[in-house]
Every structure is written in C-alpha cells, then in structure tokens.
Length: 197
Image (cartoon, rainbow, N blue to C red; front, side, top):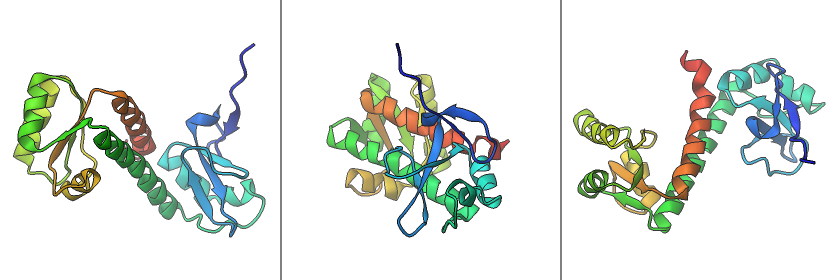
C-alpha cells in the first residue's frame, strides 16, 4: 500500500496541500525565522503557500508567532519575501555552476549562437542588462529553435557563475540540469504569480 504524502496547511490562506508544495520555515536557536526551501532543516516547521502574497499575509497577521507558539524574530513581511527570492535565485545559480563544472554550459555570443543553430541547447540565459537589440536577437533565435529563454541575472553575475568575465548569454545544454533548473524557475515564477496580476 503506497505511503500517504504528508499534508500541511498554509498559515495565511489555510489551504491544505502536500508538504512539498509549500514553503517551509523553521526557527533558528535565537528564534529567528529561516526559510527552508529544501525541507531539510531540523526542527518544527510552519508553512505558507509558495506565493509572495501568502507569505506577506502570514507575516503581517503574525501567524508565525502563533504557529511557533511564541515570539518570532525576523518576521518582517518585506524582509522575508526578499530572503526567499534570494534563496530561490541562489538555487538556480548553483545549478548553473554545477552544469558548468560538468561541461554542460556554453557561453559567449558566437558560441551560443552557433549552439542554438546546431541544436542541443536546453536553456538559454540572457543577461538582464544586455542591450535590447542583442537580447531580442538571441530570444528570437531561441524561440525559433524552441529553446526556453530565461532573464534572471546580470552579465556580471552570469560571468561569476562560470568563473569568467562578463557574460551576456549562456546555454545550458540538454542534460539533467535543464529539468532541475526548470523546476526551480517554476517555483520562482509561482512565487510572484499573484503579485503580477
């Protein structure tokens, strides 16, 4: 008989979901609230939906204090949202670095353009601070070849992830990294879903 998936309720909207679909928070020893994106930190957890709106509502209504049965430090709504955004971005960045170490990343305008034309590209990352004309050129080529395109990091940050100078574009080649980065990007987009509407 299959084991039932644990269910938890969101502190804000009270909706019950599978534990893995929610954003978990734990308390540090000094009672500071810490987001636990991987659900691996020790201790009692409190959960919100993976949405900025639910996180803000839970923080503003002091639901974390209720959930942890006592005073909670660092439960400011805006600070928590920024902390979660930072952690989500860092998870995506770490996958890019791992893909690079595994030899699954191509960077530099000419090499990226050639790889897009030849095939084998899994994801295209375009720097957020790239010139609009060049960005449109790469996005158009990626769309033509049906390669998902992501703009999340600056040129400097993309270069840092590869241990190189500034990088305007990079490709993560078809591999297991594409699926992992795709899942993390889905979480990232879902986090902002209601705030964009």
